[in-house]
Image 1 (cartoon, rainbow, N blue to C red):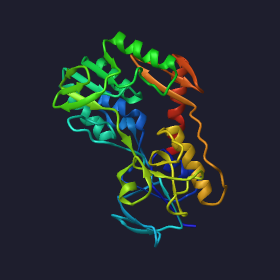
Image 2: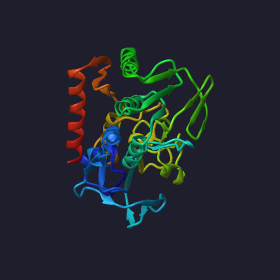
Image 3: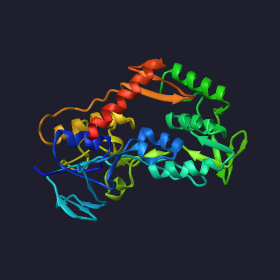
Image 4: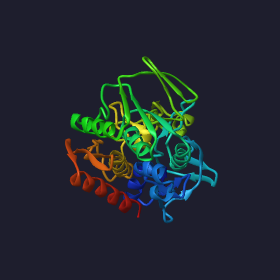
Length: 322
């Protein structure tokens, strides 16, 4: 059976571990997306890059002929019996802001913030909270704007309160329950105030990759819609996994979820199983003000236990790639 995987992220490599397929990716390295904040901190791209070591063919996918079952790339066309689309996420471009979608974005933001006195970050999720902490560590005046009534609103209340307390202790101006109504150069307008800063960073607006819509696949926010077996609702021989896919029931964008999805999708594709996909979010760990914290199996943890959980996640990722 000829199996082609588009995308060498968490889901794609997890699937590749199950079945030795042709894996196509635009890069020749795996991106540790949760380490992009460390690239921003250090200016060193290598902290978030792991070479594929020959497991992937570097090429850009231009199109897919679903009728003839061909993936068309810059390096030629490749036939498939089953196709897995697992090409990650993208971030909406918001005018007058900087995004942090990939290594290049993180390096660019590092340079911009180095020369700035003040930074405004939009969004109080994991990325926004960690960016705020690092920006403050770099000696910048930092504003963090969140529309809801708490940070990390998908995590436990204890994690939300911990992040808020630590950021304010550092001197970050955390602004909650403020809706952004406009962004001009160096100025953010909310429903109650105007914030002036040298750099405005967006940590929101994550969606599926542009390829999904370009291929004409049924999608929600750019993520291809799949059934409970991770099979495309459009084609029986096409599957989706990771951040580029979702079911009618929302599937979170998460490395842990992507790894699980890649494994299940490939097993279903090659007939090793017929397993409905059910994900588990084991741990969500962050680092603020030099302190690890987060949710482990739905319970708040901090300190050494949180750090161990974070390190174990990285170790498993490296094993996945190698």
